Length: 317
Image 1 (cartoon, rainbow, N blue to C red):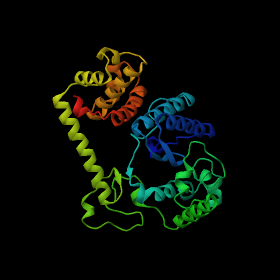
Image 2 (cartoon, rainbow, N blue to C red):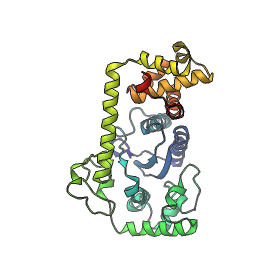
Image 3 (cartoon, one colour):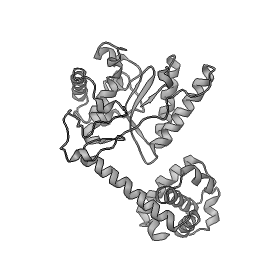
Image 4 (cartoon, rainbow, N blue to C red):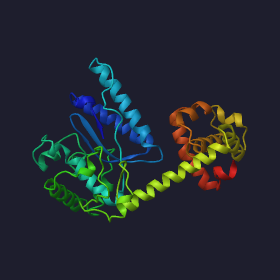
């Protein structure tokens, strides 16, 4: 979720909405992410994104930076248009997917922009209309959501609409509002996790105690791995390891080149430098003489090469 600075409007006319959505479509295609629900309000935006291999931060940075630049040019203003950094929460899909879709798509109705579900189905700036089959949105993943209700498309839409209608009377879910205080252990049905689960909580994660504990453990393990790697190797050693696996000179992967072996070495270097050594993508781009986008693509390819060839940073460094 992202808000306008001082709650100022982010969209002044229809062309602003259209431009924002065009940018979103471009970034979804570039990063391989999927959008399951979305809503453009007057002064804030909600997006439900399932990320691919490229971090969400890259998608959001390019989306918001380019929109702000165009907005400032168009309205002859300067400075920030968004209130601080966007807010994001990692969500447990099993418990919260449908609840989040409902929460996001009901925003225009709860804000009084429309007065009924029929009006919501005609509202152009939310993904609800696409789920109802009123107006296709090519980049919105409607299949993922509708499949949660039924394999039959018509029955799925009917059940989805009934699910939204049921949610109108339930009011707001505080745990979905991205406030400063996250309710610990709150479940999708409004109940609470067991008292032991409440010990595992994090305001950046939406889910039950077990889910949160697993995510935190995974992140901490990755940080420990990066710390150990950082103490015993330097970036040049990573480049040498990647070049050795690919069978090319180190210099070859530090300059543009499309030969398969060189591309393999560069991809492994991207993956190992970012994910195993903990370097920033922009720093890796400078080191390899490529763009940040190329580094993101290299990370994805590097993962595939590791799996196909059975290589790993720990073994090769």
